[in-house]
Amino acid sequence: MAKKDVFFAEGDSPKMMEAYKKAQETFKYFWRELSWEYRRIVPALDLACVKVAFSQKLNESDEPIVEHMWINEINFDGEKIYGKLINDPNELTNVKNGDSVEIPVDQISDWLFCTQGKTYGGYTIQAMRSEMNTKERKEHDNAWGLNFGDYNDILVAYEQKEKPENLIEHPMSGNMKDSLIDFLKQNPDELLSKDEFGYTFLHNETISGNKTSVEVLLQSGMDKNEKTNNGKTALDFARLLNWEHIIPILEK
Image (tube, rainbow, N blue to C red; front, side):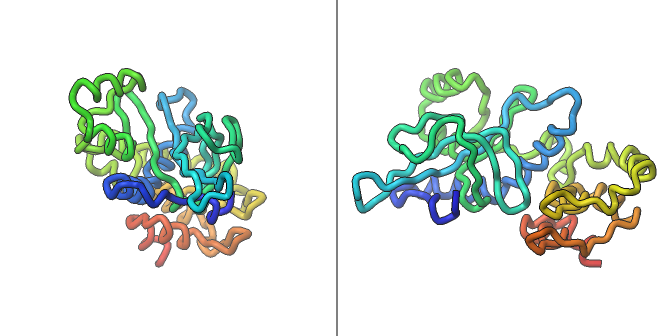
C-alpha cells in the first residue's frame, strides 16, 4: 500500500491525533520487543499488533472513508511495517480481513503488546478510555480480556519503572552478549552476509536498538559502512529511528 493511500481523517480529535503521534514516535520500542520475541524459544508475548489507517473514496464522495484497523504478524525493515489485516472493514472494499499490507511508520495510528498481565502502548485505546467512566472502562477491558491499567501511565518497555535502563536497551541484548560473541566466532561468515534486500546483521541489530549487539558486531570486524539495496547504512537507521544510544557508536 503506497504512502499516499493511507492517512488520517480530518475529523480526528486533537487527543486522538496526539495519540497517533506518540504511537509513531515510540513504535521502535514495539519492534525492539517483537524482534526479541521472534528469537525466543518460549514465547513471552500474549499479543502484538499495530493499528493502521486505511482509506478509500466511495461513490465519488469528496472525503474518503477512513477506518483504523489492526494488523499482526508484524515485520519491520527500518522504514516500512509489514503485516496481515485482522479486522473486517465496516465500509471499505479495497481491503479485507487477511490481506497482507505494508505501511510507512509515519502512517500507523497505534501499537500494542501484552505480556505477564500488562499492556504496552495502546495510545488510541487509552485516549478512548480516558473519556469513559469507571463502569465503561471495566466493560471495555473485559471485552478485550486485558488489563489496560492507568490511561495516564502508558508503558513502552518491560519493567521500565523498576529498571529505567530498559528504556535505553532491551535486557536481552546485554544478556546475550557472550552468546553472540561465541556465535560469531563459530560463524564468521555472518559478518559478511546480507539478505536479499542488502541488510546485514548490523543493520538489523541497529534497527532493533541493541547497543551491546552493535558493539560486539563492530568489535568483531563488521563493516559499518555496508549499505542496503536502498542505500541505507546502519547509521542511517539509527538516526531515522532516533536510537540516541547507538548513533555515537556508529558515528565514530
